[in-house]
Length: 166
Image (cartoon, rainbow, N blue to C red; front, side, top):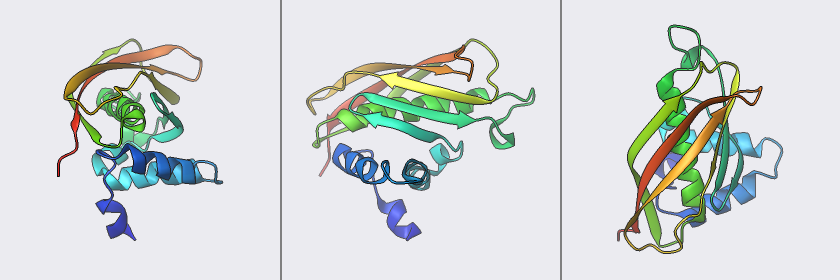
């Protein structure tokens, strides 16, 4: 089964991404299972253990719980774990809304850190995905808030959109 999961490719298939989410998310534990599958397909992204709580065309909301595996030396969530969370959240918001003949790849990532991130953080991206697979760049933003609603970080991700290859 693991071999089957690792051969799935969400990067160029908004249709597969949408179908998988729509099938699993209504089920008990389905959102967790979707998050685990995504982490199996992309092990580096999976290393932070993000949980997706909402996905739709141009919308992604993910949560990350502080734990030893994502902490830095001052016992808060590591800066790069937050950047990883921002990259996957912007990517899923974008991919979920792209036409079936399009794919995307990040070309630039930047993040502004506003305070130490502790506990459970929520990353939100809302965007307007391009309606065509024509080669173009799109700039997405996301915000990361702590449980009290305080802004921990905001990030920008530039994605190159283009047609799927062969």
